[in-house]
Length: 283
Image 1 (cartoon, rainbow, N blue to C red):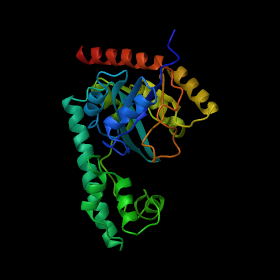
Image 2 (cartoon, helix red, strand yellow):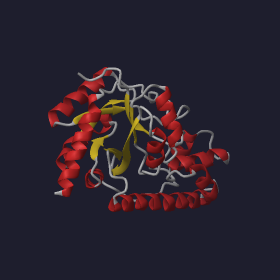
Image 3 (spheres, rainbow, N blue to C red):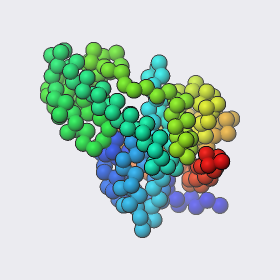
């Protein structure tokens, strides 16, 4: 029988994307909270994986190499998590570089638009805020806030850089099917993240090779989890889960690190599926 004392969190972020904690600090916090397994799933980035695995070496914590790919759809975004990816695979790295370069150029164009709109911010400052993370709109929003052009980050999105805002710039596009295929090619297990709002995508992505569904997510209530668990069973998907942890002072609507009751047997299910994917790729 599985050990009920195991504590698992399969959805975490670090400073390699938009998280608050550096990978070693995330590992330390996981150890302090008695977790045995975390997956580092930074947005469109694997830059923190080596540091996280290194920090966990010799401890009781396993760090699963992961990623969270952002895909554009007409209604907004669909996010696909990848577990046990080969983060050194050449084509996988090349695609992530393309993501990063696209984000870089996009943010620079946003600063140019904001200047024309009378809300100038420095692109250099946006880069400083991002640090080693892939530049994203939250960093532009923070620069707007610092410059006094908005009172809150939410206002920055609503007034300027939201999808319908005057300073919005489209980015390099990846379809959800592309995201699933990319993760599979990297030997990983693709899982639809926080799926409550995008359940219409489950069936198309199953046809594309989706292997899991994030059922035990954040602060989803019992009814939502039960409904998603039924969908996972219907489509033969692994029911994963995680907190979507970004930091102690960020994303307050999410549960804390290790705050979800994620069944520990999910880790072995993901591992076995990843082994099968890698064997299929090798064959």
